[in-house]
Length: 346
Image 1 (tube, rainbow, N blue to C red):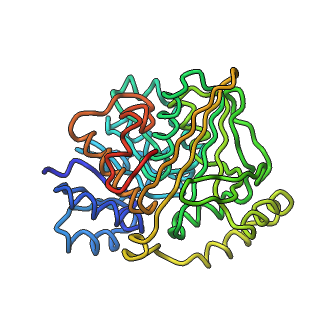
Image 2: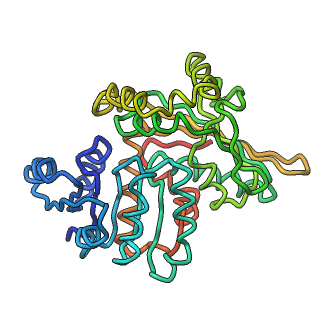
Image 3: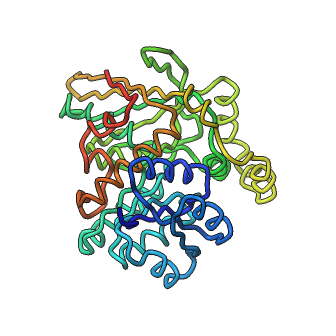
């Protein structure tokens, strides 16, 4: 198949997983990123083409996107990189996807909805574990209770973060939590609420976090009140709670550099990913006392990200890319996640 898809940030941990998934499906992506030496070393053994360009000059982005039908943007933190890539996609009429979980990025893409529709371009942030499974679960719950006014989601991931994810977490430590209330994004303290999460297979304690669904699930379901919980051990719950008082220290550049320098490169190896898994839980309620609940089990979050990113890319390449700002479930339905082998919903 002709290489009409660009994987930008290809030599990162998740980028490499996505490359392997594209090859499994017979695709021949173009590999992109800032470092030409890293790209060449990665692309040549695979027989793939590569394009080295940074995102700080529009003309370079436009050149890098020339001839592409879609991009899978993997170079985070996306709060630093997504705008430049998305603007380039609008100019060059290239469909945009990324693997972010950052609320600000979802909102920035939603604000481009009209421009994307006019350009005939789809903007879909969050085509990985952030937020495909939870987005599909949210829409499925909405379908069970169309009158729902509150949505609560929780997840548990057995396995550690990649280098890129950990860097994003370090940067987010100085930010407040976030929930959606009456359709509006509302900042709240870190670990604002705590609750038990019954995943069926396991029970955990979770804390509220500013996960991408606070933004995306609103556009998928229209539900005005949304909270997301992450299962966390007591030590992490205490640490996140402490950021209410230590944000000034955690935000210092010297502390951020110190923490980032100690994040190990890479992520879980293949054996660990095979053993790891993710559990999700969701609940909706309405003003009349109605309630619906559902659970989901998926493969490891990084393996899932590769599978869902490429699943969506294949749909785009087949011509199924509705223009405008889209979420995974809004564009492709609540059963999209069930296309990933090893996923179960009940």
